[in-house]
Amino acid sequence: MTTVVMLTEDHPNGVLVDASKPLINIEDQGLTRGDGVFETMLAANRTVRKLDMHLSRLTNSARMLDLPAPNQNALTQAIELGLKEAAEGPQTVLGSEEHVVKIIISRGTAEEGAHSWITVAPAPQSTLEQRTNGVKALTLPRGHDPAEEGSYPWLLTGAKTLSYALNMAVLRYAKKQGADDVIFVTDDRRILEGATSSVIVARVNNGVKTLLTPEPNHGILPGTTQGAIFKAAQKNGWALGFGPLYPQDLYEADGVWLTSSVRLLAPVTHLNGNPLRHNEEFTAELLDYLAQG
Amino acid sequence: MTTVVMLTEDHPNGVLVDASKPLINIEDQGLTRGDGVFETMLAANRTVRKLDMHLSRLTNSARMLDLPAPNQNALTQAIELGLKEAAEGPQTVLGSEEHVVKIIISRGTAEEGAHSWITVAPAPQSTLEQRTNGVKALTLPRGHDPAEEGSYPWLLTGAKTLSYALNMAVLRYAKKQGADDVIFVTDDRRILEGATSSVIVARVNNGVKTLLTPEPNHGILPGTTQGAIFKAAQKNGWALGFGPLYPQDLYEADGVWLTSSVRLLAPVTHLNGNPLRHNEEFTAELLDYLAQG
Image (tube, rainbow over all chains, first blue to last red; front, side):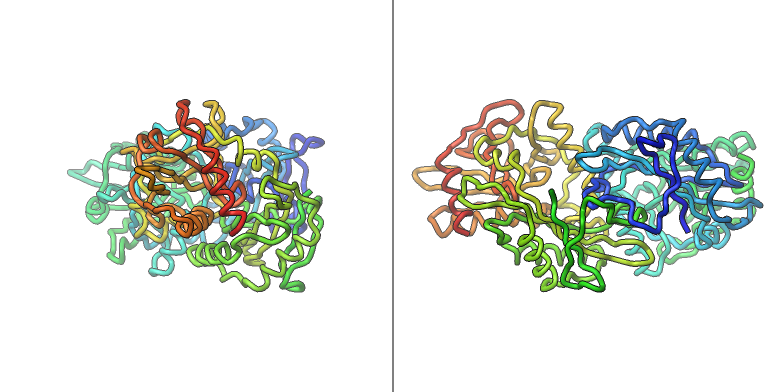
């Protein structure tokens, strides 16, 4: 069961609502137009991980859509309330109780305007299992290079909007092909990102361990989890690399992962049906950085 | 006030619901992911115009998103119910009472699955006025050529989805620049379509009247109104053209219009702040074709 906290005029810091009943007006523009923004976060032991980074990205998304700036203090209180009331979450390999926390800001109805809410739910087992079992990924052309769109603010590149139909469609497409997830590539096969994740790659050369990811902020949604892993890895002696990656780099890598806030990191075990090297030690090491973070 | 008819298990052909109360679950994937499809239609004297074309496009959109095929008979009955109960609509220049009718299919919650509903509302005055007053349009780069995406079904090119945040963002952008609407162009400035409309152009040469539009089905959503106008115009002696159009063609044209189901057609009076030729006779002639259709 999902716990829902709505921020209302009477309860600007949030009030618990019964999510088993309809709560949303049928003319809400979040529904009729996918017109809104969101963040998905992981809470460990009822504390949201890297909340600041999520609130900062949410604020940026809201600004790009001309939505009112989120009240970060009110959202933080609403999240606390939701986490306090949430059903018990699973205990994970990281040794903590875990929940998925979402913030949604919708443009609302034309009459009543934008509104926000928080949802909190126990982390789904199927997602947690990907941390250890990994995923089979498929490379799919993105159809265009989002880096070319960076100078066109009206295209909302880099905003995390409710208009996620395409991301959902590619995941369904992957499942029909026997895969679990997707890695987008440009038409010249440069690696971009997952459908709902970032791509990171480990390479060991003459004893030097390097973590690589496609250049962030280059038409790719900056991954908060990728950022947290890179920060911790650098402190622990890894070299970092940002630059063009191609499928060949993934086949030749010592480890490839999809990273996202709830899943944290999932080793990519197969790419387009071909096995990839899966280094369980590296997976444990990077997960451990996140557990400490 | 909007009249809403929901198709439910108990009422597969639709039942009137009170839209002043919340009707949608907060975890409906139409809301959380923009995961659904829709059609917007015009009803004249409480009869939907070109319903078959809309139902056919809706069925195609649903198929592209792996949503259940819409029950066209049930939707038709639901629309009839909605139109019977709707508040009075305005009388328009076409001499008919007009309403906006929408069909929405959302993927619904994970537990309950996809569901559909109809909304009916009096046609808004601001939209109707564009038929005579026209619009100021801005050309904006689309960021990529959607024609290049046609072979990638997972990108949903050509599906009319609830993920419309970008279309709404460009309209806000246009308004900030003092314009009313947008005409998308490729990076090499080839004309594509409006934010929520098709572009058509009239050209008179040695007494031969030609209507032109960018090649449909080439990464552009096929416009049902553009299609209806072209069909009627051909019967009335116009030549038709489909092919690359550039801003220069619009500046040199004898008339430029944005066409869409509710607005029908709106003359473009200004492009990027520069006046365009506005032939009121042609506007009246093309509107008349639609009134007969």
